[in-house]
Length: 203
Length: 203
Ligand SMILES: [Zn+2]
Ligand SMILES: [Zn+2]
Image (cartoon, rainbow over all chains, first blue to last red; front, side):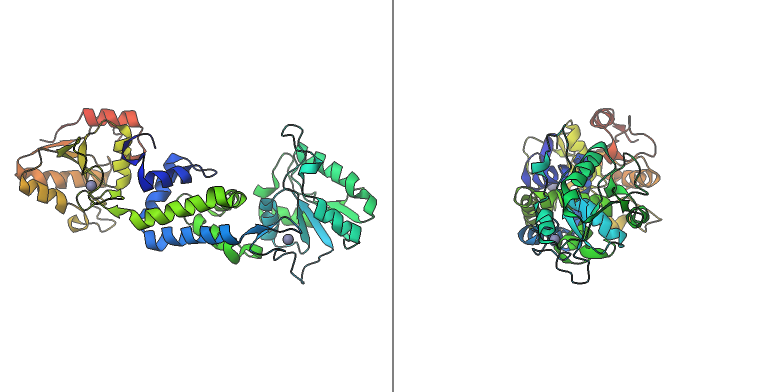
């Protein structure tokens, strides 16, 4: 807030915090805060409570890197899912996107990023250890690489193919339907489902 | 969230609440919640606390209809402002917009709406009583009408001119710079300042 009555006080502080959320700015933050202030008990307090609860209970799954109220997460603990099929994704957002598509019934490995010379992200910065442990144990049948079709995504997929190639498990990658240069997260559910079912062997 | 692992649980609930905020949807809500989950202590908890505090302390000013941590609000209690000049606005959002413009030094009357046959908003639905009381007391020198240049805004200004005409105070309206059909809230600060300084007598 530039100057005026809102520079200080509860409302100004709240607008400042909301305006720094991704995709929002001062104008959308003011609109949101006003809507919340119009119904403090019905909207603002429940939202604040949901945030407190999430902050207190949500953690990163030590097996797959997913965010969940439990560790291991719901997916890792789901006996109806194929625990020997592991889909490698860049982020929790991508994991959520695949879950919304609703056709994948294996588990995940969330890397937490992709290799990037520009951003200085190297192999040691990626969360791959839990998958390597599972591979060492021989409890993995197939690894599906589901990374965005960007330069960094492709680089990471090549590196993963080499890194995981020695374990003698099937390595596939989602292919059909992922537009070149497109980010996986923003694809519609149908495209994602198609890309997943048309996966092909890497070699 | 459509189906999947997020239908229940803390994260799904939080995304649901965030996605119902004005201007947001499921995708932007997921993006915001992920950003908050990445730094629970640094971002989510402070935001939740700010909401709790705002919900507990912010109330509607009984003198002007503004939202503030105090009643009467900062503006109504500010001895450096002209308490005998009252600017009539539709909403708190419009009051904030005028405060950001930074050139107005009087006080406000927030109507909480404008007359609208379509929405069934009549004179009794508008918050005008505090201004009438001040007019009865003879403590008002000028009333500035600053309503949006919409059909309903114009109708309301005409009604206010008649309703307030008998008190013998100067009634002006912001004029220059408010585009026809435009909402006051989204105007830039310079346009608002120009409209305010170029106000003219109603009759
Ligand atoms: Zn997990
Ligand atoms: Zn006030």
